[in-house]
Amino acid sequence: MFLSGARFAQLQQGVSALGKFKKKSQFGGIGLLIDGVLFAISSDGELYLRGDSHVEVLFKARGMEKFIYSKRGIPVTLRYYRVNESLWQDQKQLFEYVNLAYQYTMKEMIDRQKMPLRLKDLPNLGIVLERQLWKVGISKVEELRMLGAKATYLKLQQHRKKTNVSLLLALAGAIEGCHVAVLPEKIRDELISWHSELVHQNSDHS
Image: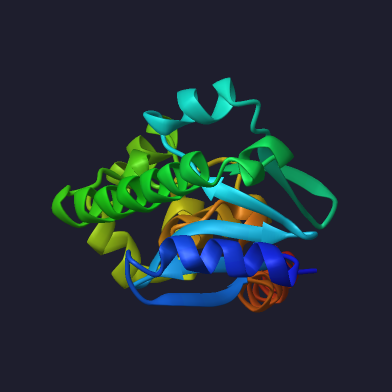
């Protein structure tokens, strides 16, 4: 369920000065974008503005709650904050917050493009997995992306005592740039069936 007509019109009026407004499916709801920058989500008729460490403080002080997205029954808390009734009534403040959400998301995107990420900075990975990837000759984000989840998984399998489908999905999420719980269905299903095939082959050989 998207925002009501009146609220959508109210929002549109406020963002028209910032740039071209678009909608797309996102996290089980509708993502709202200005010039390709995802600054908000609408889910169950509510609006959630994207926050970062700077604006989160403001959003929390205003009593805005975090967006909890349920993926296959797993709750994932995202950095989007619900626009409550009092904020809808305060047009000036609402548009200030929309502007902040947009500006910070755009800054985040620019910073991400400039900054050479380390493997541990990718979603689902951490320092332990980063070190294991180094051991199998993968030290850069580009190398991981070029190899892909399956080839990387097979490399790790030779060095790790324990590998499972969760590791494979975590690698795929890191490559896609998303939390494992919000990995696109198509990728998830394809990897799960590939993995069970692999397990089956290995048990045949053992």
